[in-house]
Length: 169
Image 1 (cartoon, helix red, strand yellow):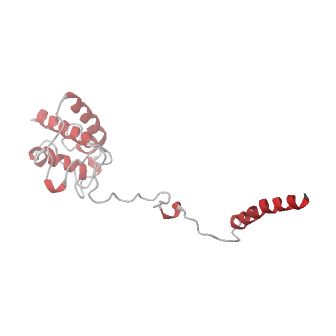
Image 2: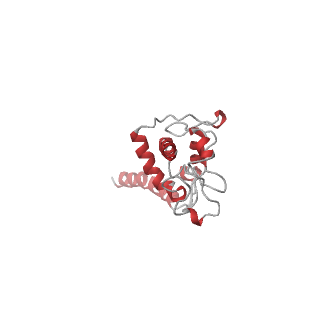
Image 3: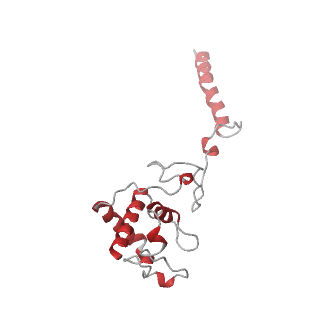
C-alpha cells in the first residue's frame, strides 16, 4: 500500500517539478510571442503613414491620375447649412465670414489668404476647390483633410463657398 502511494506521488510530482523548471527559466524555451512580431508605437510617436494607393472605408474621394473630381453633393439647403458650419470653424478665421480673405487671423499671416470672391477661386472648378481644401497650398494654406475628415464635409464647404461667390456678385 505504501509503495503504491509513493508511486502515485512520484507520478504526480514529476510533471510538477518539470513544470517548475520551465516556469523559473532553469530550462529556457523560446515560445512564440505575437507581441514581439507586431508593429508597436511609443507614446507620443506619430502613426505610420497610410500604405500607397490605399482607399478609405467610405471610398476614394478622388483618384489623382484622373484629375479634378466632379462634385457629387448637390448644393441643397442641408449641404449649404453643413458647409456653412464647417466653413465657420475651419475657414473663416483666415478667409473671413464673407470669404474676402480678411478674417481675424489673416492680419498675423505673412502670406495673406486668397479672396474667395475673385480670381482663381472663382474661376476654378468645384473639383479644384475640393483638392485645394483637401491638400492645402504649400506655404499658404494647410491641408484641411484632418479638420474635415469626410469627403462629403469638404464638398459641403465647396458648395457653401460657391454660394458666397454667388451672393458676392
